[in-house]
Image 1: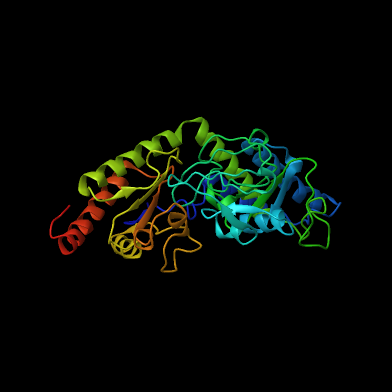
Image 2 (image 1 turned 90 degrees about the horizontal axis):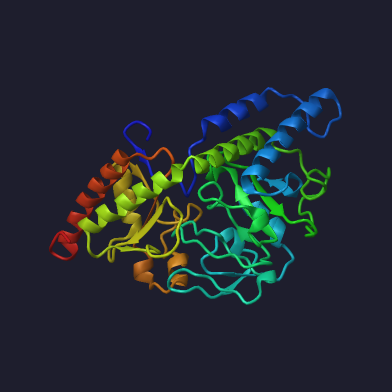
Length: 353
């Protein structure tokens, strides 16, 4: 909560963790280029490798298997360019840009594939929060939303490659990574100095990498301390309270395994964009879907892939909570949403339900 506003859009981006900020400030004072062999260069490389180790421990992989990129979107491009890959209609645009989105999706948001070796399946959907079962030998898994929110280990996931991003778990924007299993060939898209073992050239973003490592370590501590179990309780309070205000609202994926922080709900006839603007004016930051597309007034492609029609797919709102969300935040949101809903329902149905 910042001032009188309540931030409930953690799936779009997260507030910067104190540990990440401190690590970034310390990295700013390091002069050297990590490719240089002198003391200053070794100091910069030390910061980068420490962060690589922090991420590896939290993500359950080997440090040498992490390729730092500018974002999860770049990581997806690095993994998928030149491959004949398939994905589903619920994948992020950064993945769909490189795949044939022909994998079937059920009404419960479950993706199936008969050829894992050329398929991409996300672990957690950014809009619905619905979790997927990852088949052995999967080409690529988008773990961007899941990393830091649920226990996971890349080495045990069954995927050959995975993409992650710092700003989804309390790190800075502008730094992500592609994680690969040993023996997987990657053709560099950016060539030059041969950084990242020749897989991604360009002087490394030491400040961003330092923040990423510290954020990953702090996120792992949150998981171990049960922070997300409390977040899930708050999410359930939110959904139960909204359901009491409206018997017409549908909670997408409510009966499916989901991220503990995500609620995605549809109120027929009440446009998601309208709700987002009304709640923004009331002091609450929520979204109508993925941050990469929520500025565009169109139906959710995720809901359409799940079988919702265009009208329903334009009436969704995503509320995503974080470790700093309080029960008072949730109650205040529900009070404000309920007041707006009462007015909408009176105009739309002639009653307050």
